[in-house]
Image 1 (cartoon, rainbow, N blue to C red):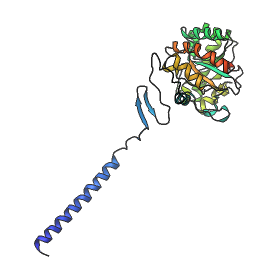
Image 2 (cartoon, helix red, strand yellow; image 1 turned 45 degrees about the vertical axis):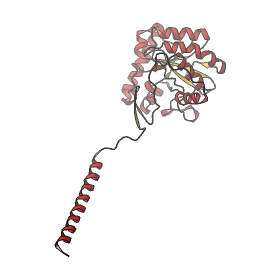
Image 3 (cartoon, rainbow, N blue to C red; image 1 turned 90 degrees about the vertical axis):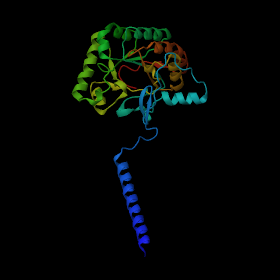
Image 4 (cartoon, one colour; image 1 turned 45 degrees about the horizontal axis):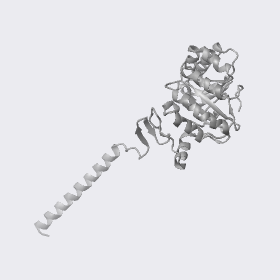
Length: 291
C-alpha cells in the first residue's frame, strides 16, 4: 500500500469517526429536549386551553349561532350537551345524574340573583313548572327574600357551597363540613322549615371527601347529564335547542340564574318549556333527596 492510499484510508476513518460522534450528539440532544404535545392533546381556543379528555368549549356569542337542523347538527349537539353517566344514574363518586324516573328536572345554579331569579320564577310560574335551585350561601344571605320566593312557589332547594368554591372537594373534611353547614344556615335563616336535601359541587368537581360530607349532613350529591353551557351566554336559541335536543327521560338539566348575564337563560325558558312539557313531566326534585 503506497503513501497516497494510506492517506485516503486514514481520511476515511476520520470521517466515519466524526459522523459517529455527531450522530451520538444529536441523539443525546433529542433525549434532553421535552417531547412536543401530541396532536390534539392540547388546544388553545378563544375559550381557553382545552385538553383531549375534556369537551371543547365554544367561545361566547352575544346573539348565539342559529340552530343547525340537520341530522349531523343534532348529533353534534347531543354529544356536546349530554354528559356520560354510568348505568343506574350514578355519576362521579356516587353523585346523582338522573331523576331515577321518566321525569325531567330543571336545575338552576349560582343564585339567587336579584335580576334573574325573579324572572326565572315568573316564567316557571307562567308554565306551571317546578324546578330545583342550587343556591350559593353568600347569595342566600344577601337576598333572603328570594329564597322565600323560591320556597313559596314550591321549588326545591339545593346547597351549592358558600361562595362557589370549585376546589372545595380538595379541602379537608372539616373545612368542607364548615362550608356546607354555613350555607345551610344562611338558607334556613331565610326559610327555617325548608328542607335542604341536595348538594351540588361547583364545577361538578366531585371528590370522595365532599360526597362523604354531603351525605353525612343528609344531602344527596346532585350532578347533571344535560349541560347547554348557558354560563357561556351563547344566546337563548342555542340554549333552548341544546336542552330540547339532548334531554331524555330522567334527565337533570343544568342551567344558571346567576354568575353572569343570565338573560339568555331566562329567554330560553320560553322557547324550551312548551316542548319539554309536551314530551316529559317536569319536576322539582324530591325534598327528601331520593330519586
